[in-house]
Image 1 (tube, rainbow, N blue to C red):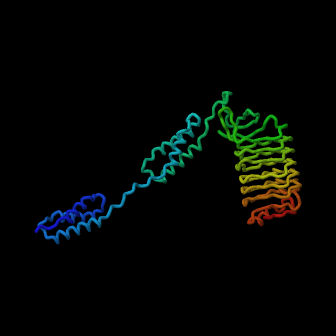
Image 2: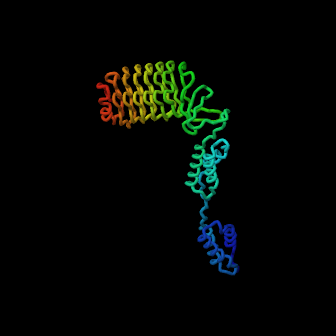
Image 3: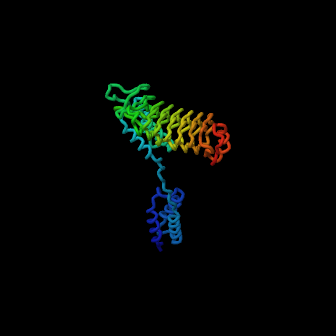
Length: 361
């Protein structure tokens, strides 16, 4: 009689549900072979052959292996680049010098030219270049109302009466001010603006506050890199000196000569040189603290500082102490120094005007 195709027909129907594209070529080939064999059978074939074909087809279905899911390639993070582009595009060309803005435009063009295939390194490089160009923008100097913008070497007086001298295209030194003889406090600003032109204040000029006898306190702006010769010489009422920043490298010769009420001073890590006679005749001075950058102390730097009992030096770079640097200081003055420099600093301060001194940790 006729063979039963029920199981085989069900297996064939089940096999039809599987899409070749979803499975590995090898496992689907086994299924296709079993399916072709099953489709070739009829009720006239032996029941055992039909049952075996159904079993093979079901086994092939069970053995199908799905293709691994193809993940799209991970794109490098462009968040920082996009932010840099946005910041650059917000800059107004007319507000900056042609040269500095041209560099920004070049960096911006390069950044925007990066396509979807750009590597992480390329994106990072373009971001850094663009941010650098933004930071390097130089404000365009505009007419200050007098018909002329101060140029290098020229001086001008700001609205608050302070006088400055232009030393670079965007930098000035503080020169003086009209009320020097009567002022009790002074602030050296970070920047000064003349009309629409803004300059960084990077120096206190020679003799800027010389003989400002009523000056009691001074705040030195964060951009000041040098204190000039005799800048505060003869400031006999000065008791407080504060450095806002860490850019000052030089304390000039005689800078604080005769500041006889100054009891202590802390110099920032940036200071590399204390000039000759810088703190001479600071007769109330008890402690001096110097940061990590100090390389040189000039001759007679602390001469006649009869109450000076401690100089704390955090630097390991000090290589020169001038003649008579400690002359007239308090006997047994302590020179505090980094542990690894105790021996070498002891030699440095030998024969510098004070026989009785101690170099301690």
